[in-house]
Amino acid sequence: MKKKWLAEEEETCALQMGPMMDCVFLLILYFVSVSTIDMVRISKEVRLPGTHQGIVEKDESGRFIVDIEWEESLYEPTYKVGVVVVGDPLNLTPMIEKSAKMGKNPSFRVVLRADRRVPYEFTQQVMAAVAAANVPNMLFSTVEKEN
Amino acid sequence: MKFKEEKDEACSLQMGPMLDCTFLLLLYFIASSQIKIEEKYLGLMMPGNVTAAAKSLPAELTLAIADNGQVFCNKQPVGGANDKLLPVLQAKLKQCIDLFGDKQPVVIHPQPKVRQQRIIDVLAACASAGVKNLSFFANQ
Image (cartoon, rainbow over the protein chains, first blue to last red):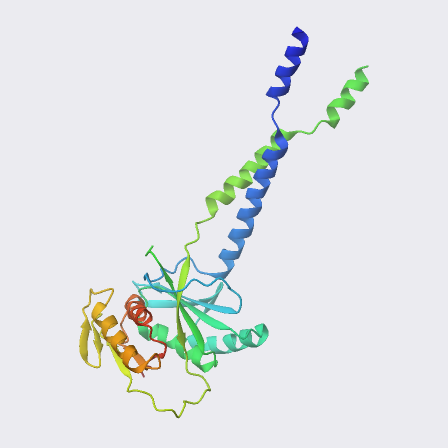
């Protein structure tokens, strides 16, 4: 009787490693997949303007994202497409045209992620490049709460 | 007998180092990741090759934004520099939309030094009033 009781105690003390490892690997997979996608596509330096209006897009296909970072001390913007820095906004036109042709998405659109401090004289140049590429659909990125 | 015991030891899986590595990886990804802030979008139709329709449209409303952030609708002040929600502008736009429908053309004319935040404030007021025919004035 005593021997049996001892055996039961040993069983309850054993740590189940299988489910724990499953959870840990699932968490790792989640963080790997989420972090890589965001790092490539958008700039973290852009402080988006805040507004209560705006729509949330579920379908993220067919989008060409242009980031405009702003350096207040130099009064100078940096235009970016992904990780590529574009010196002259006019150079965006062939890039947008090429992307629109390759994607063949009827709802192709340009998303302008401009910093809230960027003056209109610089955003206007990107808008002119989009219009020159014959893409009629354009979106301004905003956030609900200003960060 | 001694040989048999050694064989058993070699077959056992060492979970300790494996767990160490796994938790280190997990910690790295948790520390390096940032919480994604949900973005919203305000749409705009750009002029392209499409020719303008011959149909007569009501006279356009011009929303001028001064360098200090003041907003004017056809030269009449409708919002102060610190007025973020622009209720007067919203009311005026709603009135026009009710009269002429959502084809009422609205042109936003910001001065070159106007910041993006102020343009978004005006765009949000337009979206709130239901403006569909919106364009930007191109400074030369």
